[in-house]
Image (cartoon, rainbow, N blue to C red; front, side, top):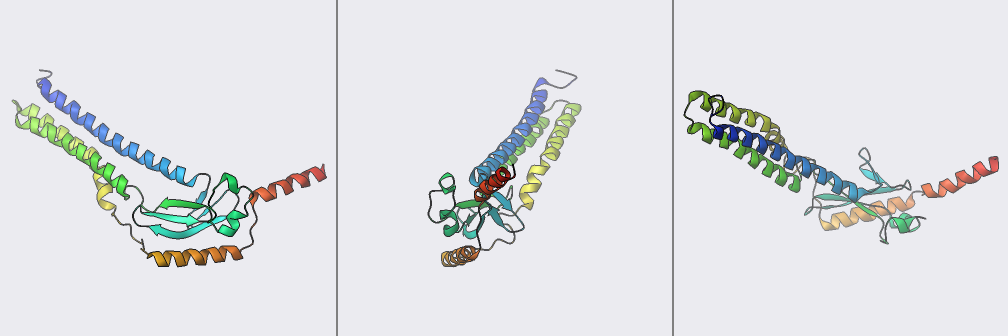
Length: 218
C-alpha cells in the first residue's frame, strides 16, 4: 500500500489517465490525417470561401459543379476551354474536361470518418471512467474509494470536450442541398459556358512579359 491506498487502485488511476491520453491521441491523429488528405486533394490551389471557388496557380477559377453524396465532397472544375489552353496544363492534369478539385463539405468532426474516430475516442474515455469506479466498489477504505471516485469524475470532466463537440455537430450540416445527377450536369454545363465567355489570362503568360520589360529597361 502507498499512502494508505492499495497499489491496485493507484494502477487503476494511472491506467485511467493513460486511456484519456490515448483518446485525445486518436482524435488528434485522425484530425491531422484528414488535414493531410485535404491538402493532397487541393495541392497548390487556393480556396476562396467568399466565392466558394478555387483559384489555380495560373489565376484561373474552378467553380462548384457537383456534389458527391457518397463521399460527401463538393467537386470543383475548371473550364475545359481554359484548362486545355493553359501553357502548364501538362504539370496539372491529363484530363481534357478541365482540372477538378474536391473539398469535403463536413467540418470536423461532422464527416463520417471523423465521427468514427471521435466515437472510438469517446468509447475509450468511457472505459477510463468505469475502471476507477469499479475499483472504488471493492475498495477496503473510504479514503481509497473517494480517491477513485474523484479520479473518475476528473476523467469525465477532461473528456467532456470530445463528447460535446460530437453531440453538437450534426451528421448532415445545415445548408447542405442535394441535387440530382441531371441538375449537377446542367449546372456544370452552365458554369463551363460562363467560364468560356470570360477573358482568360494565365500567370505564366504574364511572367515572361514582365521579364522582357525589365530587360528592355536595362
